[in-house]
Length: 231
Image (cartoon, rainbow, N blue to C red; front, side):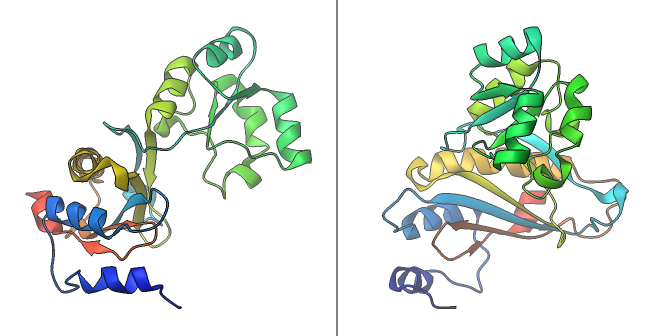
């Protein structure tokens, strides 16, 4: 895979054999984010669990102190008064059967988060095949299946992110934009890592945080000293 000149130049400033303290790692990532757009800073955490086992799942949601820097488009499945509440709270799209049809027939996906009231989950369940692979299926653990739709919409808009393991037992999450600067990114990093550590399954054995890397959209990864995170 060809790497651009900016990537190669940035990679030269990073010591690949070193485990950086979080503050230094984030400052380094910000300094290497040289694209013409405001790059997203992502956190990648490999955990010592086996996601194939139900008792070793790590999943949840958290509102980052400074948000993600992204304009989050929220779709809500609700009817009646709950639909009105969702609209009043700032939802971008609200519907029921009509919204399901748009998604099925028009391949409509102009949204980043899907929220549903519990009574709508029978309907939303029919969209599992298309919402699931995109990571958009509402889930009670993530707070996206709720009767309090106003709160769910407001949290999503404020920068609530969902974290969960992929098939290789790694969590990938955005923690902000390069323009945030190292301090705000550190606040978001600390909040997310705190939530992941708190979510450690009782069945997890051995070293929980195996590795931790922060990287910008177009830049190289910087390894973070995971041992310090668990101290």
